Image (cartoon, rainbow, N blue to C red; front, side, top):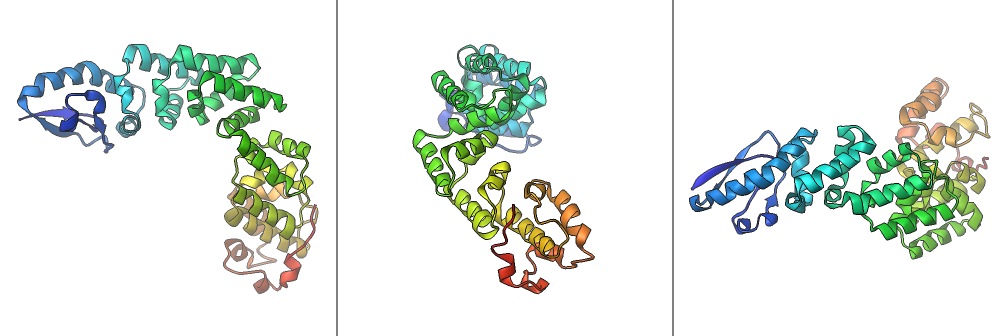
Length: 337
């Protein structure tokens, strides 16, 4: 028996020795090198495979700010990468991404999100998609955003991708704005039947098709939310808080916020402040739902703790409105906006 040191946690089980494409990749901490034992008769073959085929690829990834753990995870999720040519496939694709993203760390981030992109043809698959976006006026900043956040959508077939872009254009989204990219992402993961289902859900709340499209153009992700999420959030905002649909369409991103962790705690705090006369009744809910938690606490909790000492406990859910001296009916049906 002989021992071959390996890097990046690459392991060849005995069953795969005859076919290196079936190599099993097991992520492990990169600093821990380990040995694998093979019969001596197989040493020349294994050394040749490792030095000529695998080692150069692993060295390339290491040279581009991929950690050993990154490489292990990427190759574990897509072992076929090891069967691709370094010079003809991996390097050209990496360079294509870098020509748009500029920074190695940004390319690494994208490829970690979607390792199978390393199997895509630059000329046949990636270039036509990016060209299509540029031709309709999508700015480079939005294309970079696309590659950083939704790289897997580049794996769609060209015809499918162009069809999606056409759908987004037909719905009057501005290619110059980043919401266009969000809309592409939404349509890429949605069938026509699902789109119609989401339209019907919003119609149940009295929205017209035009109002739904205004909502979509402002916040495309609203159509990716689950039926349960949409229904529960709308029920709270409309039926319990008494907000009008027009108020919600002005701040559509609120639909994506956690009802239990963000919307309800903040609304309860603001309602108490309104009932105490500490903030105005027509306060736009975007002013307290959109800010970060730190900003919200500074503006609406800490600022009024002298007047309402239990306000932070209310926000944390440790006390209810009854403990603050309010009847439950005072907290329901309070019309706002």
